[in-house]
Length: 99
Image (cartoon, rainbow, N blue to C red; front, top):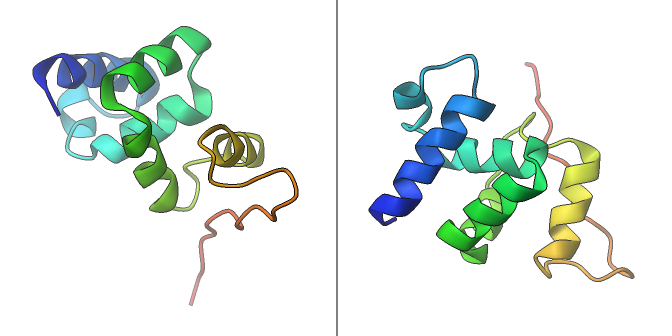
């Protein structure tokens, strides 16, 4: 990831990972990307997508942890990133399990 992408991601961390400092949030950049994908406004999502690329978004979606996405965003990104077609079943959202 280049410096421009890192700077943008850190700014997004400050805005979308409000319960941690930006430096703490940057230890898990995939979490920051997921939070922007899930909650971001159009400008923030577009800027981040342009900066880190679709492959990064696909990687985050493919390795998402429980709670990172709501159902609406989960479905949207599978279609938007070409991972599923309208006739395909969307993979289940990751879920938390308790022993």
